[in-house]
Length: 152
Image 1: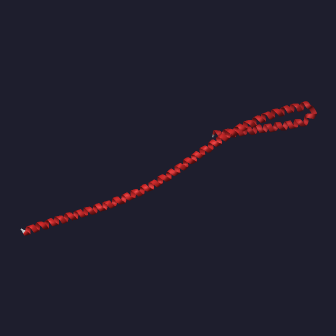
Image 2 (image 1 turned 45 degrees about the vertical axis):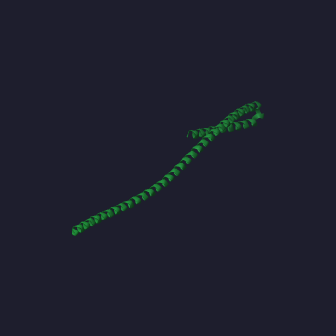
């Protein structure tokens, strides 16, 4: 019976040793898995940090693009307003050219009535009429260019 008890103790010790080895192996596997998880978590954290940087850069670029577009719209609105002012001034020049042409025509009539004494005045009246015509043509061209730029 001492032999039986010794055998039983030896068998129990072997069983305990086997289970202890199995637990040690399981603990080693768990530790290895934890190392893998830790590495994966670190990699995910690095990836998240990189993604955050990229999102920030994209946001900055989008904001810059929006600002550029806003500035372009403001510039176009300014150009449009200036074009309208130019169109108004051109209209005034056109009116002045028309009135100058009428005055030159009247001066030509008066020069013709004056006869020989009005001959020099008739030449001046003709030149004034030519200038009025050129002014009217220039105003017309400017008006057309401004209208085309407004339509763009």
